[in-house]
Length: 257
Image 1 (cartoon, one colour):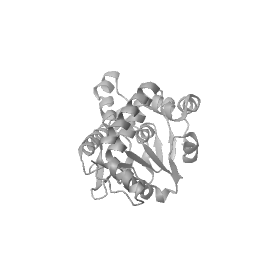
Image 2 (cartoon, one colour; image 1 turned 60 degrees about the horizontal axis):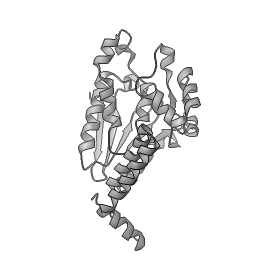
Image 3 (cartoon, helix red, strand yellow; image 1 turned 180 degrees about the vertical axis):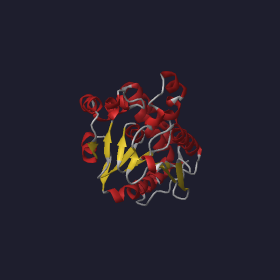
């Protein structure tokens, strides 16, 4: 059984990646992590796909790391897994990524959701970073991404206590983009993905890169990147089409050029 299921909709420019270890609430073992990295790498290079939706199951988006692979692990074992490379394949994706979160998104599952650019949460979703209760700490970026998303005091309250929190709390903190009923999560994520896929692809890519540049390198670097990217987009056919369509009061027909 495949650890990751891929449902492609090339005509809409959307791909749905589904974690597929339902018996263990989609816990992240090494095989699943590697499958995710391969899938993101391939989709990032597929010109037919413009937006990626990442989903889990009804009970869990992802309940965290598979502790069976960690309980007897040594520092050398953890280093050998090259988690930075596996996480990097997701973080480095140039296309918009939408997380459709139902059920548990804990530990590595919460970190996985935070790798997305837009997070659609179900009303019953539960987020959290419980690593401290296991005698460890987050290792997939939560100390940095969570702090950037919600600020120092809220992040440390979550990280140091290790307690789960609701989708409404995630929305209030700025961790979620939207909260919808559980049975609407994937439909809403696919709707947003289809809307984005109809946008000019280069503008989408440069907006994402500019935001991440500022987050990773600081305000001045981000502003420089934004200015260069803004100037670059004036050489595209999509810029001409978008502005002409607005002036002519008609829908634009973007081609990605």
